[in-house]
Amino acid sequence: MSGGQLLGLALAELIESGLSLNVGTRSADRWPETCRAMGLRVHPDRRGFDVFLPVATSAATLANLRDNGLIAVTASHPPTHRTVQLKGVTRQILPESPADREFIAQYRRGLGVVLATVGIPPQVAGKVVHSPCWRVEIALHQVFEQTPGPDAGRPYGQERRG
Image (tube, rainbow, N blue to C red; front, side, top):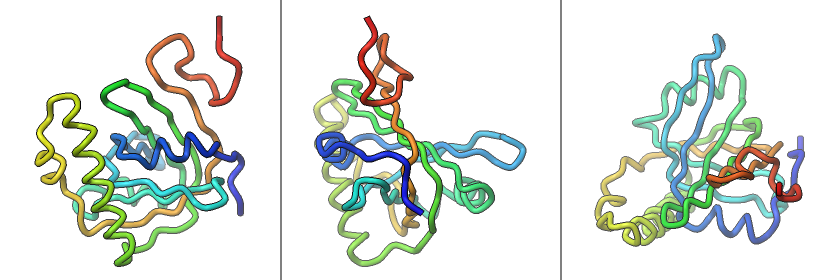
């Protein structure tokens, strides 16, 4: 099953660059759940991505993904508030691999650099629960602009309002 939307190269690079990542899911009775992700890796075809969820903090999120597969990932750049939301469906949930662990470590370093620009010491990112993680493979279906302003909520790539 392939995703429904292709990420542009610039957007793919942006969302892999150490942004703040939050995952939203819902239970069978539509109760919302959220957790912090520890990295997002876009697939080479840019029609899907892997998101890394810490085992210690993602039990309810994983239960929701196993139940209905629906996921929304919000990626935000704290210094500029540039924000996008990626929506998709879970393909599979796997334990992290050694290569994934290195990717997650790289993400944490990048997040530390980004947070330092807004006055948060880099060691704070180093203290965030991060390992072990689940690697959740997602088929991308929709991308939304969520940067605060008049275009927040519009599908990404649509012509700007006003």
